[in-house]
Image 1 (cartoon, rainbow, N blue to C red):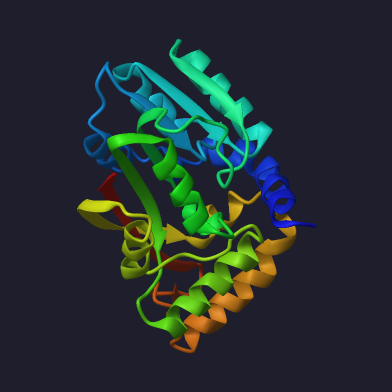
Image 2 (cartoon, rainbow, N blue to C red):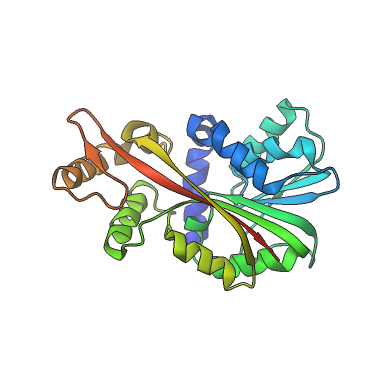
Length: 254
């Protein structure tokens, strides 16, 4: 199975559970994204890897148009339903790969993408495509979970994420994510960070893969007991495993 097929398989499986998971509708995260985008009725925006359309629906009321773009048709179905329920009429839904955006040069005033970078085999190619389709002085807003700057901790963290969801490739460190955007010629305008507490049950439930629940729990609980925190403060209290996700939101300009 190639990577794109794996992504589609995983997110087809996750479409309903991810759409309903409270962590993805967290109002604090959506407010951070809204403040970074600063939507206006003159802007058209690409929501890259829109998933179930949560960010799309949050921004669309104050934009001229949004293109909700995703690799997985089932995710776009969720996005259509969400936006229809909100009576939003200014959204186009398109399916495709982030590495080959089917849009003309300088098509968008801005691009937003949440929790996507760590699923790309070639994120530099994706960001180059983003820059291509943005107009001069266009704005990119990236929000993603980041790993530790310590390479060993980051490697362990990413291994756990892959065991949970095989479509995961790599979470960047904060420095690595900044350098990724700068390598495509983007100028960093601002960076915002925050920490989100996670609990094993709600985190694994989103994958909708019951066969992974017990084996991965055993691994993470034993790592926590051995004092291996993976850069995410792994903790086992005897009842459940908890950890943190460190978020970084970057606003960059073409």
